Length: 208
Image 1: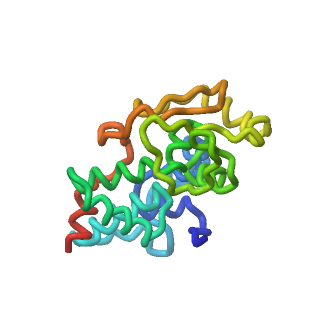
Image 2: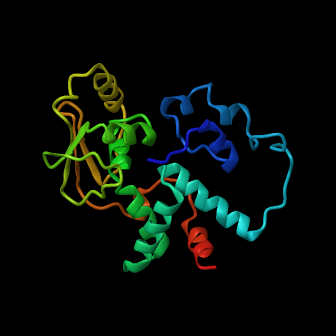
């Protein structure tokens, strides 16, 4: 499976915003974006004039990097959002929020979406009692996401659950830290999605 293998802190600096790609490190003094709030590379501190297309492209790249999806995947999500009723940009973000790896992260069962994606791929979660190892699986209303029995007592999950006890999931999700499970109470609305993305710019980009 193709994936980004370079330093992810460079992505935050490239987009000029904290994308919280490294979990707890992003909240500490070690955060590269806090120390170097300019673009990576030799010409990172050079001020550049950005075109309208450039602004739209950066917004698309920001959304893609936050959710950790590849270019072709992202375009497929956009095409699916276009076919749904409602506002295309909002539909796009709602689809991305429903990815299983994102839901695991939102429940507090992983410190970052990248870690959630890895845990899901390793078969550490079940959906309605059935093991699902596909990070892009789209959760549905009333589905239950739980830590797989073989992973429940691992030191890693004990550590994650201790951290999850201090986190508050979005209103469309419910979590039971003691039982290591969560439930999808409803599908997310735009108000529930706190990612720093202006989705209308992404729609304008694909409408060119």
